[in-house]
Structures are given as structure tokens and as C-alpha cells.
Image (cartoon, rainbow, N blue to C red; front, side, top):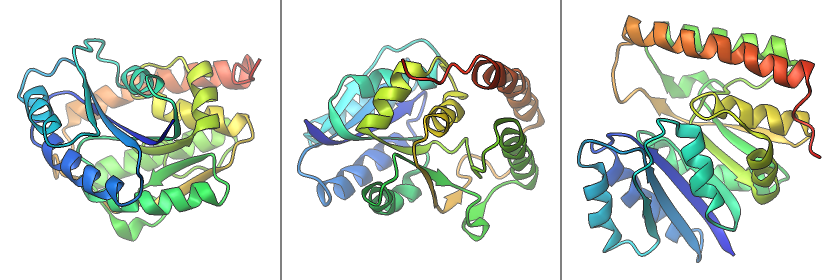
Length: 244
């Protein structure tokens, strides 16, 4: 059994994938004897997969799962994690390389009894630099989730999460969301199954753009709005989170 599996979902991430893989390998080698870094690629059209293939030669713990064409990030992460038996499962978005230094704090939280540890951009807002409009919409989104699901998680969407073996087994069994909403669903499954969820403040700098395109914002709202209602129906009405 592995000690740690890190999954990095990618789609045209040639700008970031090399640096996050190399930084992750250095960090994890200092923490574990037996770990894997798994890049699961969603049929990138750029040089993402060729970069990873080149790195595999010098990084023995690196693996690549390619040819995923589902455009379903959450499903890809679950698929990659389920390929390995591990004590801990972790995933990070490819552009969050600066946040990797928070992994030891997340592991410490796990050792202190947390089943799910999620990076939080809003637990300490002095660490966050985001476009004002995007930050406002994100905080409103999290507030709506707090009200609808009667919980107090400050940041549901952060693509920087750690699961215990027990937590991942339950999440993998009960989750059905396939794309971005999977981040939220993992926390709801953990919450409604009485797992301990911990938020670790992370330093987050918007690396892709200092502005939020209005088209992207509208697209996010049209995706996540109906998604919230879907989760509310499944989890508050049907109570689908219950483990058989």
C-alpha cells in the first residue's frame, strides 16, 4: 500500500505542469518513502503530455493517465485515485504549485483526526489575491451553500484537498458529480457522514489572469446554479449521502 497519492488533473496545462510535478516530487520525497504523483490528462491539445512523459524518465514516482476525453475533471480525479491503494489521497489543480508547501500542515491536520482536509482561500484572507469580482461571487456562492446545507465551510471550491483512505472510499462510492461540482460534493458527503473536515488557509495568487472575464463568470453561474439545486435535492430531500 502506498503512503500518499497526489493526482493532478490537466487540460492544456503545459505552462504549469512541469513546475508543479518537479516541486511536488521534491516535497513528497522528503515526507514519504512510498508515494505516487499521477497526472491524469483530459486529451490536452498542447504539449502537456509530452512534458510529463519527459519527466517520467527522471521521476520514478510519476505516472501519466492520458486520453481521458470526458471533459469531466471530478470523474478524472476519482478514476486516477481509484487506481491505487493508499493511506492518503490528495489532488491539486495544476496552477497551484505555490500552495504545495501547505501539504505538511494538511497532513498534520489528518494526524490530528481530520478525515478530509481542504485548502481554504478564505480562512485567512490576508493570504489571498484574487480579482475583486471573482472573489465576491465566490464568497456569495459559499454563503449560499452554508445556508442550504446548514454547514460552515468557508471554501468549497478550492482544488486542493486531502482525503483519508476511509473518506475517499465513501466519497468514491457515493459521489456522482463529474466535473467542477465534485469539489463541493466531496465535502457534503464527508459532512453528512459525520467526518471531521478541516480547512487549512493557503496562500492563493491568481496565476492565470488578474481579471475575470464576464463570459467565464456567466458560464460558471449557469453551471453551478443548477448544480447547487441538484445537490440540495439529492442531499437534503433524498438524503443520498447515507452509506449503505
